[in-house]
Each structure stands twice: as C-alpha cells, then as structure tokens.
Amino acid sequence: MKQSTSIRKDDLKIIKSDFLIIGSGIAGLYSALKLSELGEVCVLTKADKNESNSSYAQGGIAAVISEKDSFAAHYNDTVKAGAGHCYQKSVELMIKKGPERIKELIELGTDFDIQNDGFDLTKEGGHSRRRILHAGDATGSEISQSLLTAVKKEQNIKLKENHFVIKLLQTKNNEDVKKITGVLVKNSDKDELLLIRAAVTIMAAGGCGQLFSRSSNPELTTGDGIAAAFRAGAEVIDLEFMQFHPTALALPGKRAYLISESIRGEGGILINEKKERFMPDYHPDAELAPRDIVARAIVDQVSKSSFDYVYLDLTHLDSSYLQKRFKTIYQKLLEFDLDITKDLIPVYPAAHYLMGGIRTDLNGRSTISGLFVCGESAWTGVHGANRLASNSLLEAVVFAAQIYNYVKENWRQKKDKSTYLVTEKSDIFNDDQIISHKLTEPLKKELENLKNKIQQKMTQKASIIRSKVELENLLDWVNLNNNYLQSKKFKNNYSQQLWELKNQFLIAKLMLKAALIRKESRGAHYRKNFPVKKSKWAQKYILFNRDRREGKIDVIK
Image 1 (cartoon, rainbow, N blue to C red):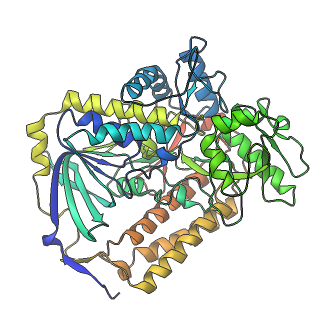
Image 2 (cartoon, helix red, strand yellow; image 1 turned 135 degrees about the horizontal axis):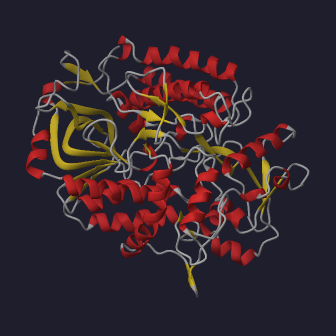
Image 3 (spheres, rainbow, N blue to C red; image 1 turned 90 degrees about the vertical axis):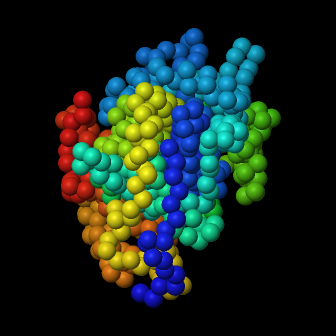
C-alpha cells in the first residue's frame, strides 16, 4: 500500500496525566469532575465535546424520588424488563444510590422540570410508577451541559476534542503484571499521532449503534472503546443483547431520529396501516410494554403490511401541552413537514443501546489492571437482556461515582504516577519503525463501501429477529472481511477510518458468535428457531477475551 504520510515511532509526542478519561458523555464528564479532586485529568473525546450518545437522550433519568415509589418497585421493574438476566447486586446498588446522584446533578446545575408539588415525574415503558425526572424532552443534553459547564471551571481538567483512541497501551509492573498505562491517539485537528500516558484510565466511549444502518446513535458510535479493551485482554460480555428503540422516525433517506418513549408515557399510541391500534394485542401494558416487545410487535405489523413503518399517533392529545412538553421533538419534526399535534408520525425501530460491553465489577474495574469502565461501554449487569427506559443515565452516574470512590480510597499518587513515567514505545508497535496514519483516496472509498455493507447486512440479518442460517452466513462474510482488514495491505496504518471499521468488524464478529451460542430468545435477543426463554439460560453469560475468541458460557454470582 502506498502510504501518503509516515512517522518514526520513536518521534511520537508523549503527554502525561494522572487520570485519562476516554469519552465526553455523562459518564466521562462526571468521572472527570470527581477525579479532578485527586489530580490532573485528561478527557479525550472523539469528535466535538457535545457529540455523545448522552446528549441525544430525550426521555430522562429514572430514580426513586417520589414517596409513592420504592426501591423494591424500581428493582422489580428493572429485573422484569431485563427478562430475568440482570446481575442483581448491580441493580440493587444502582437503585439505592440513585437519589444521591440525582441530588448531586441538581447541585451541579441540572434543571429538571418541576410542578407545584415537586418534580414533574413521567412514566415510560416497563415502569410501574412515575419516577423519571426530565428536562423537557432533552434531558441528556441538559445534564451534559451542566457537567460541561462545571468541567470548564476546573483547572485540573484538560478536555481534548477530536482525539480518536486507536489502542490501549500496557506496561509490565515489578510483579510482571501488565497494566494499562495510556493510549495511542490520533489528533484529527493537528493530523498527528501521539501517546497519552496515565496512572488510571477510564473507558467511557459509548456503544456500537453504528453497526446498523438504522440507528439512533451519532456517527461516532463504532464500538471503539469495547474493541480496544478486548484487544488489550479485557473480557466482554452480553454482546448478543442489542436494544432497538421502537419509535425512531422512518422517512426515506432521513436519519432515524428518536421519538422519545415518554411520548407514549403521556398517551401516544401506535397504529398500523389500517389505522388500528395494535399493542394491546401483544402485551397487557400495550404501548408501555418493555422495548423489546414493542419493537418486535412493530416488525410483525410491518410484515403484514404494504408499509415499511407504523404510525405514532398523538393527535388526540392536547396540542399546547405537546408543544411545551416535547418542544425539541416538535420543532425537529417540523423540519420534515410533520406536526406531531396534527400528523401521524411514521416510525420503525432503530439500533439504540448495547446492554453488554466490557465486563466490570461493582467498582467499575475491568478484568485488566489499570482500566476502569463506565457508561454504555461497560457491562455492569443492571440492564440484563433488555434495558429499562431511562436507566442508562442513572447507571452512568452511579457507576462513575463507584469508580471515583474506589480510586480515591486506593489512590497512591507517588507510586501510581511512576507507572506512566515509562516512555518506551515497545508496548505499542511491532518491530517496524515506520508507521502511517493516512489512506489513499481509493482506499478511503473502498473502506466506506465496506462500512455501508456491514451496516446493511447487520440490520438485515442480525437485528430484531434472528435466524441460525442468516447469522452463520453473515459471520462467514464478517470473518472474511475482518481477515482482509488485518492483512499486510494495512500493516502499521493507524488512520481513523481504518480503525473504526476494524472496530465495527470485531464487535460484529463477537456479537454474531454470541447470538449463535445463546440458543433461546430473551429480551432483545430473539431467535426464530429458539423462540422462547429457557430457564437454564437466565443467569448464563457469554464471555469473550483474547484467549476465548470462540466464547465461553459462564455463571456470574
């Protein structure tokens, strides 16, 4: 391959920090704020600091705030939505710590909607009580902005935009144990590669929704954090469970813009091609059934229809209330000549959230030394096989706080700092001195075409309803192209486009293998040839790491 730009690895610039946080979503920003009390913090974000899955979250954040609610009720709703696959210790911790974290967010400036008698709590699918705090229909953005405002005030925090993490770096300590000591990064602004060394690394890089052609996620969600951790030796788990949000805008050639579940919580209904309401036929909770059930119901209705979508109907609701309560959605859909107070909204499911991720314990520690994980990159076990609506933001702040508390208790600055003072680059590359971070124009086009193909194929064969034959055929295709991306043609090339695609193919391969191994249907994972839940699979988890590339079935207690 003709390389347009190259560099000697010994010439790479090195930056050092006490703490390195990868990702500027709510989990990453909260972690940065807390850890800035202990030392210097470097936050890397792949694109603009405002561009994260968190900022797209519309519905809200669930917590037991009302006297009419209880920890037991929230716990039961979470476990029920998770189809019996939740890690119970994590669920208990998240729910009990929730009110404390909400109070902290408010103190940081988050402005949740209120009524005369307190918070304006709403209800979404799978919840038995009104417990969801929100800021209009832009809750994620509101929390993110309050955290960003606080971050900007902290001199100990350096936020670096347009920094793409290519790989995690490991160094052996005196006990011959490998420890994560930083990252290799592409700085897009300066078009350069550099190393960032840190004593503690926190992965908060989000999920992998861009594996699919229909996704509510921003373009940057290509599974980079999960892939990097896997390559470094971390265990990943539950990758077969990809949640598809039931109601994303379905217009030809337009992005799958999310239509918040809280709209259904306030009375919106789903109707089919014949203008008939159908959800009561699928579940007692109708439109407020868990997301996996609503998504499959929509797919079923479309299969019987000449349309590629169903309708979300709000026309029976008060017009002025809708415009005020769902201001963001109302204004956004006007751009598509759709008025939610008057028009039926065409919707169809879109890839939304990965329940699995990098395996962590209750303190956010991964299975490799020096790496903590929080947010969607992490598997904490709280979501089980299907995430309960508005639990993701709660999980993000609760487990980010767990990481802070653990690090604070164990932080030995002088000893830990010595780890990242190591500057040798032997842990980064092979013996070749020359590396590249550019691609020729023909290769860029080739990789873009390959990206489009994998997104289309994953949507067609590995999304809401899966079959053995389609999964196996797709896995063969993924393996073939994954091997191509690892070939000599791309040796020592560290371009962002190439590594994003490598990450997508790696996550796809693991997801497909996990989907084939789990011979049942549970939550977001539905197999045509195994259409029911099997009790023996409830607490079985499918794990992968570098030594278990074919997957291992384990029971986690």
